[in-house]
Image 1 (cartoon, rainbow, N blue to C red):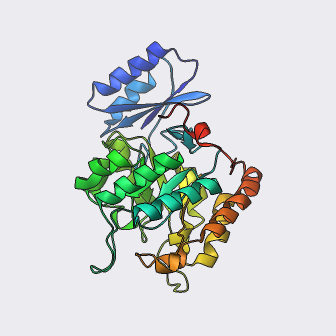
Image 2: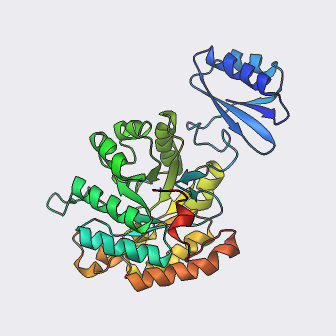
Image 3: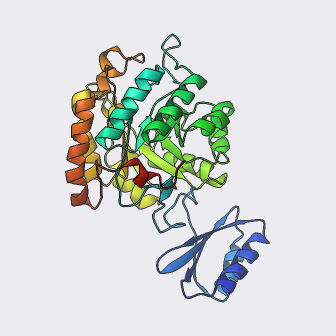
Length: 352
């Protein structure tokens, strides 16, 4: 249920509404837009409460929300969420590009790639320290040492960092070293992990499960939001279909649909969505044309010998740089901005 008021409603009346909601063991979520303020009721709502709210001063309307997700719904939060991380804004007009290897392998490897990501115009360095693999004998990542390596490379080159967290026990240590925590497709419905992320104090990139519906993805996001963390990004990374030519089928429809259903930023992952290097660039461009707020792209200096074996979907550095140059031209056509020549100081004003 949501309560709608106009922006001319006095703050005192809005607080009266909030207090009334909270006296009934419900949580009030206030979202202020350009022309109206929406107050969401979180919890089990007695219909009588809605009837009383309709009579309160300043209330224009009370609407029952039938969706199982509330805080993730655009009905609850009409304005787009913009996540500001050290000066980089995700969810606004600027396109954000996250680039790097599937896994951190060594200090030299991640430092070299960070320099290349920065030189190309990327804003975020990606890299896995803990890797969930289908087979138990595959490379599983270098662990905490990898987190330290990536944090140092990111700081040196003026990049934000993003890494995957796999279990609730590792959330705190990952949050200590990384700017953004990523939840992989296999953990989208790891509800204990999602609850922990609600209190981690870091933005979260939530990848869609490879067999998940839009509602299931948004309900997963709801766990994090309900835990008190408003900074969630949704990621389309391809779904499992009958097609075997590509690793997955990148669902471009998900981008505008999720933006209609939710206020959360939407990121596209064409690397996992296709699994084929020659398809990553065109699907990155298609994702931007579809309205994506950002991209997460695998790039490696020696992809054919990467330790994860995912080199077939990783771009070479020159391909990555060429892609970002093309995105600089494409972004304004679809209402985004992207500048490959920004300096670190512009991203991190006052950062030590």
